[in-house]
Length: 471
Ligand SMILES: Nc1nc2c(ncn2[C@@H]2O[C@H](COP(=O)(O)OP(=O)(O)OP(=O)(O)O)[C@@H](O)[C@H]2O)c(=O)[nH]1
Ligand SMILES: [Mg+2]
Image (cartoon, rainbow, N blue to C red; front, side, top):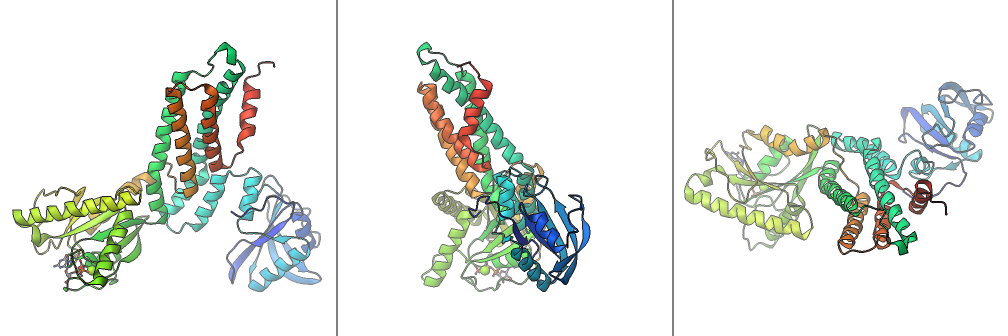
């Protein structure tokens, strides 16, 4: 969000999308919100009870501008925590523009992007993570992203971060107190309890960080790379999933030359399917570039669908060759993922063209995490494939697990982890409480950045509030 601290101004903006529509909502927030709109209502707003809509006429000087539903709120019981008036007017671009001009003439300032939500944060109506969730909620265009944003808005993540901080503040306070008794060599903070506590905090932070790639995939579309040698039916599979003739399919090996990505939402989870150029040794520069790009996509994919032609694995020699190919592909993919510092995606061997030859019973090649059988052409087995791809994500959402999706939060959690690890190492090396407290403060600061709380006052408040020792 842009930096524009509270400046005592009254801001106004169109809160609905621009253009023609049944209704448009212009929102006004700040100390003069009521006064300004009251002027436009010719003095008929003042008697409105807060939180109740009233039908009023809006006037542009002596000219009637519109008949509007006015919804006034008195701070702090409002979205921003300030006095707010919402004007629900007819959705005509002309009326919106004139109303905005009248509001500005009466002393309002056009709001900056995100300024209503920022004011809500600055007035303590939402913490920072929740304020960010409002942006995510507005951006959500599929069920998964919507669910994640609502979860964060609900405050579960913020509460957990708050609890982490509370416990750390307590230990920090106790350790700082030990300083005051430096010569008496006392330990107010029980070291075993402390070690246990920091260890479990670190475990929980590791869990949250692990959930990041899941959360991010749900929010942005789970990347699924379709890989394999030429002619295996990769493009046919993409088309079958999309139920659309999107990629060129032909019997000529090397048909697909570049990567091709398509979004598809399956049962509330958004996927990004990536068709790639067939993998083979080639002296053709363009094809080689296509193959290089295929591996780049595979590196950050959450799933690799590695296609095998059922006809190629009918005898032992064929199965051995396929297994070698799969192992080598899985290793290349793992290496590529390592280079990006990403967890390697689930590698699924997909036996295709089972309409032409049966899949060998119980064959699970080394290197693959799982095996599925399909006929892309006949659209057989696609339901199971789709189920498999959505399974973990659907259950992650259904369990209401806290999933971090925001890079800023991830970075703060990573730094918190580093600081806590230093504190734990320091404890094991016998460092004194005041030195451990330095790392705590860093952890507190980082955690505080997630929810936007101010650190030093908290700490001082806690020491004086809970440990009054009369000095
Ligand atoms: N019988 C049968 N034919 C299939 C199936 N899937 C694909 N094919 C055929 O296999 C040929 C190659 O299909 P593509 O989808 O172009 O294969 P590809 O893996 O994308 O090939 P490249 O782009 O060259 O790497 C086409 O003639 C398809 O019709 C299947 O399940 N059954
Ligand atoms: Mg292709």
